[in-house]
Image (cartoon, rainbow, N blue to C red; front, side):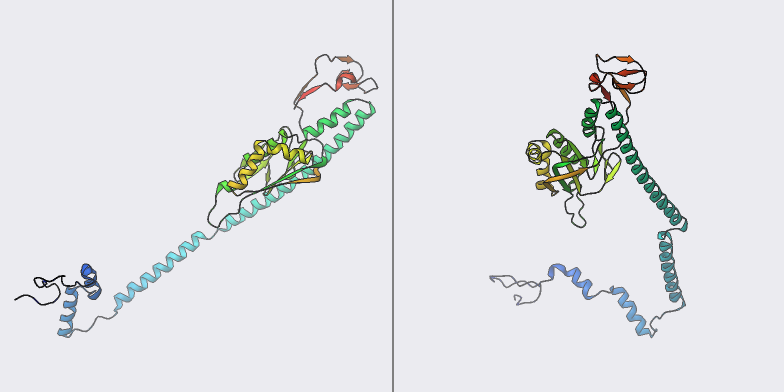
Length: 325
């Protein structure tokens, strides 16, 4: 006789399809664990204890002691972590002392910077008075060189370029989306090549010895840290500067920063820009041009020349003198 049905049975001979299987037939082990979570041997032991009339186990002194010890250990661990993370009084006091010293030194540096600017202006005034009294042609040359070297403040029309870091997504810090010192260097060099007469970055005048570099996350201009957005101001004809800058690597970089890295750039013409003077340049060595002779005479400046050491330099040749700064 052939089987007529049942789970796992053999289908009748000649049947077109096999017997249907249970949906969870392939998960018999998981089904058994779900339906019978207690091991059969533990269940049989519990049944035997119930048949023998033994009472169910209750919390005894040992169980209570174990729970109490676990709670105490948890509390002690939490207290230890909080104690280790809390700043020590000595560390707080040292931090306050350092913060006070930083504020004090910063104020002193600012005071000395202002005093240096005052002395530089006084020296420039005395120098101009001395050269004017001698009717020396050095005065015009000195005024022109002061603008080039950054020793004198300048005012005039020009170009203003602003670079600002790209907007950062929370948790996604991309270093390529920040303005780097090399970006400022390339743009500044492009402005010099385009005919700029004077340049300042965030109010810091650039001279012949000015360095733009990075220290950590800050960009320094002559050891002065700058904070973005970075504003580059250049004195010169605005239209001419903008046209020439577009042909240099600096102008091409501005377009790449905007389109590729999302760094916001803005170029605008300005009718009037005020650029401060740079730090005072230290004269380390100087030499006279060829063909110039020292004429022995008094050290007091007179109508025939300007006092130079033990002799006098003829004013006709003085404007050809050169110096290494």
